Image 1: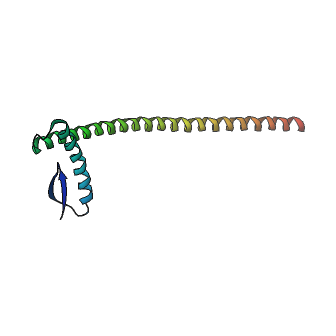
Image 2: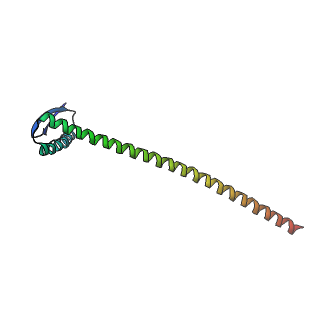
Image 3: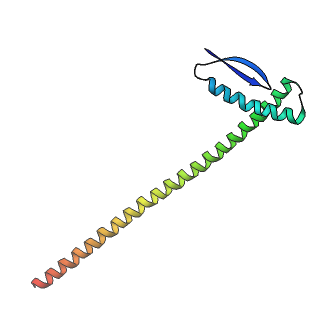
Length: 122
């Protein structure tokens, strides 16, 4: 297990983490610290616990918004997949109808050609 030092509201904290996760934890802490600093600029130093609580609520709100956007995008993707599937089915059906029409036309042409050959030999 590795350790990483992060900074929140100007205070350093050392925490344990999985090997290779140090940069990611620093990035997360930096995001949280940005919110803490923004809040402290607006309301002053109201104590680390309250600042962290308020910042955590903001981050939770960001997460909820992101989850909502993901759900919306997934619903749009499902709708597009359905439309694509419907269009693909229609395309296959159209191709089958076109192939059938070609077969029927070829049969008619062959029949006409056969009738023409029969008329010439009589």
